[in-house]
Length: 304
Length: 266
Image (tube, rainbow over all chains, first blue to last red; front, side, top):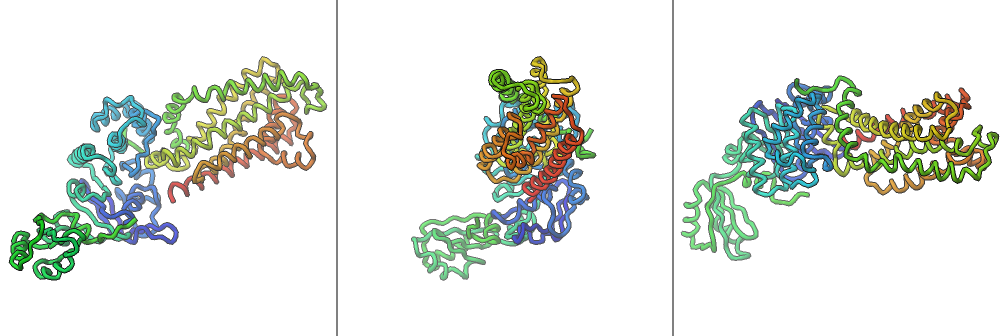
């Protein structure tokens, strides 16, 4: 569906995407993970056939965005990071006019609008001005709008950023249904739970490059251990204690308030820590998550 | 029927028809007063009431036999300009910056040129409507020497409007924020309105200033319109006016496409 080889994007001197290879297959949900500024959105804008490729090759549905941009855009759906809805138009009119941009006859658009309002649970809001909708409703409307042309591929740039937990779950539920209907989903996110929930495969991007690739489970297996023991000691003691337990885990990470011991068996590791006469104030054994992988690969330093 | 890419720019722009129709249905009341009532007030106050004090000497009024006949075509061309200034400044910035409506449009099969053409099409609709009403209202006052002159004077307003619309669109498409618009209106539109020969014969100006005023697009629009309404057409001068306005509209179009593309595609 989407094939990128050595794909690059630069803005003047700044190189946002530094040569990535991606192959998205029909029917899968594919995720781009990464911190802010990793190059996810730049990649998405190239895939959406709105931003020209600076280098490498890109094929979407077998077409080249440099020459077939409008043809590609006719067959994909785009849910941008910022809602680009017309605030002064009603919910229904927003969908209706958008359908017309795709060259669909009025009657057909009207039918699709009714279906989509139902699908995103906005039927009752059909006559409301978009201005008056909540953030979650606007997002659902943007998703409905991106489906008006019955796209084969749906691109979602941070689909649930800024939504409350209830609204996020509604969006996930709708995306999951689309996936079941066979729509290929490509999304960017910096929420690990979102990636674990939705993605069959994902790549982790950092600083314009892909640093890891695979299913959520294989990424955890490759880049983290099965379990993590989180140990809390007194303030200021963590550095010194880390040195004493280094050999008990595959990897030890020191945080200001706790130690993370990456290990295959957390309980066993914790027992060994106790054997050495170290008594943590609190301890927690948990499974490794994608978040551990993400922080391992992209670091804990804040990037703005 | 399934979604498709438009076969040409005009077909693409036509897909925006329903959008603009809905926008106009929602906003027409707000623009009705400035479009239909204000011009009439101007004609009454300046043309009829003030004009009563002006001697209707054709030798001094570029061939008009009354001040009302002199000022009517000037106000018509100025009305085209003002409509365009209103439609192609803040609304363009709103769609590119505040609401990002254009970004939604270009995520569909439509491209930047089609989006611009669609928007300019709507602006021309507004020009046509306000000027059409103006011409109809003015007709009973006897300001048109011939019917054909009135029809042609109406038609050239699309050219006058476009000559302002495309360059102004280019300006608006690239601006980072709206503060320069205040200057555009106060130092651009107002002096053009007052000193481009709409209210007084341009040669009343100091010769140096008159030369400067004759270089402005509104003067070309006013003089062309006035030739048509007074039936005093000088073909070669008219052709110069038309050529000037066409060149401005065409250059403005390319500039507008370039600026909006740069803004939106990066």
